[in-house]
Length: 175
Image (cartoon, rainbow, N blue to C red; front, side, top):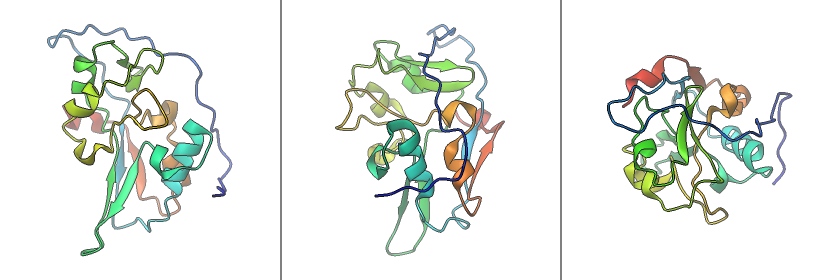
């Protein structure tokens, strides 16, 4: 599969996230940097968002390695998107036994070097129906999820119909 991308910055920061949060439930989590919103009525199911995501993170166009997933029902033609909601108090952070998941600069991140792929985060996420928001792909020994591309989500930039937008204050909507 060949991908054609619009010009843009596809380089991800190569540093490991360092968390400054405490793991107790009483601690205040940093505010989210935002969340990607989806307008299904504008989506044409071109899958450019999924392809640029996997290309940005994996160096290959692979729908199965994308950190967002589009799906449609053959009965009602309704398009849905599964993506991390960058929760303000994410359950995935509190259940991680190796503290591989943290909030850094307002984004929920997974430190691949610390993650052992146990799947506790997969089970803990209340929005993870079908295991498409946070998951451990066969190609990896660690979990993967949306990290907002360092604050400039590539999926938002390449969407030809603007079905995807980055809402900077929306993270407060989720717990």
